[in-house]
Length: 300
Image (cartoon, rainbow, N blue to C red; front, side, top):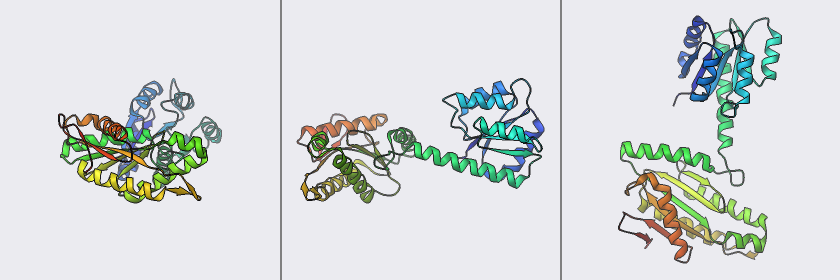
């Protein structure tokens, strides 16, 4: 997927020049020619990067940058100012307003490309960190929401299934109360590592809260996902029987569903319902969501 770059400048010629210089970068270049329309486009497009000219009529680049950084929906978008070669004061002012970098005009093509690449790499790293769970290092629920929508869209277009496993650490509150929160956190990190060790690199593994984990498995049916869930269940029970010589007997319950069942838009809900049945059945087991009318069954 190409990165969107919004170029804001009142010069049509400069837009064409930037497009020529960045042609080989595979970017989706969007153009705005005044400050007001640029602000509206930035909110709508949420570009990965903004190239912003300082000297524009009505709203100049400084005011545009100030408003971008003051708006919660655009504040994290990196801005590179386009400034005149001798305008050092403008460069300093732009950086003080929150711009990431600047490129002087007339700019060298290789310098422009290098600064654009650097800004996009930095933005990608920030976006990734914002989608990581601080406790386990797994993806968080923000990532899950975006990834789930994309996976279901692909499954609908291609007919290739996607499965969902929802897991919950059994009696986590009791573990925290008895052994303390530090050990409870260690349990969650250990479960995360077990999931990582058993899942494929392409599987999305997410941690929510309250000891809940969600896994999305592309190209996998509920049958294959249930087998994986039962391996995870057995590994958690085996590896987390004790910690530091203390018996803690950690177990997990699992719910499984896939996109081949009717109502695949509610994939996560159906996996959650299967998890609820697993808890009702005494925990430390795996339940699979089946076709409507075929109820929800335990792994044989």
